[in-house]
Amino acid sequence: MTQPAPYTQFLEEILITESQIQQRVAELGATISEYYAQSQNLLLVCILKGGVLFLTDLMRHITVPHAIDFMAVSSYGEGARASTGQVRILMDLAQSITDRDVLLVEDIIDSGHTLNYILNQLHARNPRSLRICTLLSKPSRREVDISIDFLGFEIEDKFVFGYGLDLDERFRNMPFIGVVKPEALA
Image 1 (tube, rainbow, N blue to C red):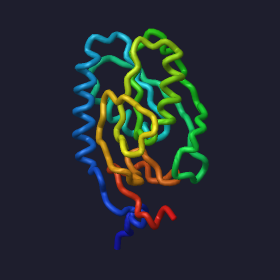
Image 2: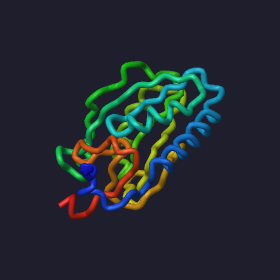
Image 3: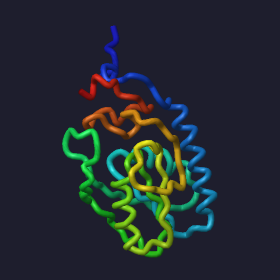
Image 4: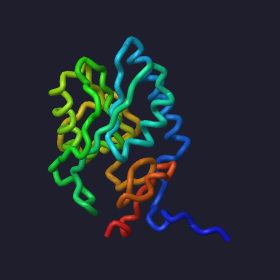
């Protein structure tokens, strides 16, 4: 007798399947490769922790030579379901981005406050270019105008988890994007 997956008690529905994600990531990789075809200095900057699965799959589809780096930021308190608006850099980049083509790889853009803070920090470091690639966007929640250059999926205002996105630091390993049952958030 098999046990139900540990996330089933929290899962209301699968919003985006594994195959839909993988197909879209391949398409994004091709588009990004074409866009940066002439770049000699492409750097993918992943925002941890949520963007890590997306980055690893995406970079397999980017044919342009590139380097990677990571930033960790926090705008959520422990157990919080929404940003506090106070952004802290927990881990900064290991390399300079001056005169580099920087592609920021993000899991989800919600209100836009955290990403706006990161963009301001990175613009001050004089990259040649700074673009955004996000797997998910919730435009109905946007409070800060963010221009997305490469978008995976636009979604409604639902609490989602899986494929890098966590539910209280768990279930990032699910290969799909699921919607959390409202009663599980109470």
